[in-house]
Length: 129
Image (cartoon, rainbow, N blue to C red; front, side, top):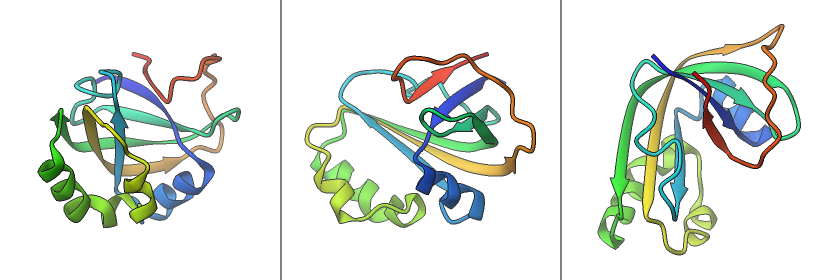
């Protein structure tokens, strides 16, 4: 089981901790992590940009899309928007997406004493072990 460090907005972190956001969707133009790098049982550490790690979750399911077409994106939107807690504005910002990773969240834990990671780059996701 691998470990990952995911960067999330403060709003999305609270949605994950409250149990309302149960899928994290990552969309990219280029093939970057977490695409085809995350698997069931992996642990994802939750971090806000410029802040420390505040918790973790376990991946219960992952769905990947390679070069989704308009029909695929419409299906992703209709099937998963509610579980990702994204609105129509979110979908309008996606111009040309080539890779989609839908990461299902389970076993969320908030840390009292967080682990420390030395991350100084702008990547939104990285495998750490």
